[in-house]
Image (cartoon, rainbow, N blue to C red; front, side, top):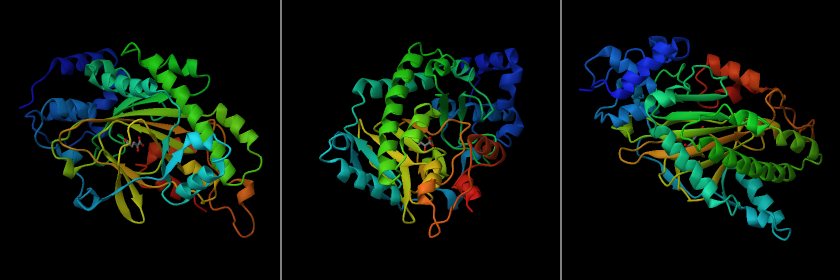
Length: 389
Ligand SMILES: O=C(O)CCC(=O)C(=O)O
């Protein structure tokens, strides 16, 4: 039987001190209703379920709480293969003798898998390990310290939470997250990031800058591959574009076969750059099959987001992906979503539209996406579908 811990008491104090901020996270309306777990107290059960899966994992639950149990048809099952993603070597991309060949690889990967592995990127090892390390330490903080950043508002620039789209998920997912908004200038955004662990702001800011630089290089290559002649204007806008770092924590799960860390979804951005530790979990949908991606230490996984599918008028594919969890090894990942400035409207590129290829998507912007997220689960490719002409 679960007992009230020091964490619980601290969290109750946070809720009492700041009920406006904290209480929606504990209400029965925000996704925690109907809890059933190892706890004898329904109130405590619902309270635990909603605050974080890390908390449930730490308490040694042996049975997955009902609110995490997916219908059988939505579980991962046993039948998935493995994939080694196409490799985009940035050292070669930077070499004029090899650039054309790398651009071809990137173009083919974006059209087919929608995913590729980025190697020889030049981002320093300690910047990468530093981010994974500080993320791990953030999720190890006492819950009350993490709870300072809880918000049910999908628009909040800094947000700690759990599941996929917690307020809308009919079934919860086995993930906690910390979202760090990275609008420009970065120092203004950094000031709102958590001040615990003490080095989080510095480490994450270094990572954000290096990661954004990488995104810019990949975008330049993608625009070249798509044959966009006037690249400079868009690249200038992207230099001041909007990005988010999503730090994900998937604790060991008592019955991983019954749930998922994240449901099948596509990303709302131009490119996502994903960093993962050595624990596998990411699966991509390819020709109707789920494939597990082999982690390659030190590399990034890049994937085409909804914006790039729209901008490329459907040539590049924003592919479904999901995350499996396991019973023994916690997993940390950091997904950086990069796109245009938040107020910028994006639609199919003029160069890619003509009589033979009419526009296939409506123009869209960030506000439209946030309104969509606030009203729908956002799983599968539902947002992108809503923009199709
Ligand atoms: O953790 C992962 O491997 C994927 C994360 C992801 O898809 C997301 O944050 O949207």
